[in-house]
Image 1 (cartoon, rainbow, N blue to C red):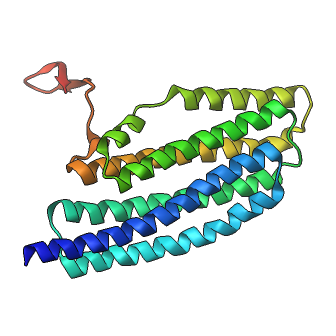
Image 2 (spheres, rainbow, N blue to C red; image 1 turned 30 degrees about the horizontal axis):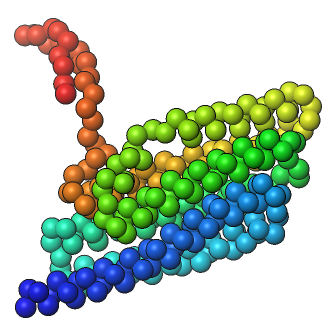
Image 3 (cartoon, rainbow, N blue to C red; image 1 turned 90 degrees about the vertical axis):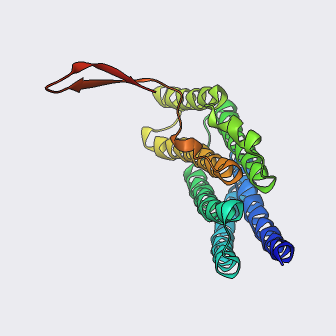
Length: 241
């Protein structure tokens, strides 16, 4: 009976994985298309990203329903309960990333022209990096691969370098009067949105680690903090690990 119950749960899990894979692919394609829209100044492609966001939101609702059915029908414990809990949270993260790709496409449409080819290449490269990190994180979820999720929790200097370079290039073009100052807003919005996507992907990685190990890596740290403790009996600096 127990074996049959586990087999039944695995069928449900495979179905949920399929839906998560589908919306992950849509979000990945949205980031990839934003990169191409920036690089090729393709407004039609940007409109496609906006329309795709609606499909992502519809599918996230379906995944919520499947997870709730899984909980009610199977009353899972241990790793199966963690799977349902993490999937609900990951689904929400993917939905937000889908929304962000739509917002980024809207800002791409606000840009009449890119000042230089270098500006376009930097913007496209940042979008492509975000897509690559997100794709790896979703593969870690599907494969229950905590090790792959861990590697994205370490801040990647590559993202900071590309972001800083892109921002400096845009500000430099404005200082040289190559584009009007009022055109700065959509460029900075794109940078901010891509930063949000990377932060949201790291949240996704934390959920994958919890699902696989049962540990909340988000709240663990190896740093030592200095705390000032002062009362009637003690007045000194105490270390808390």
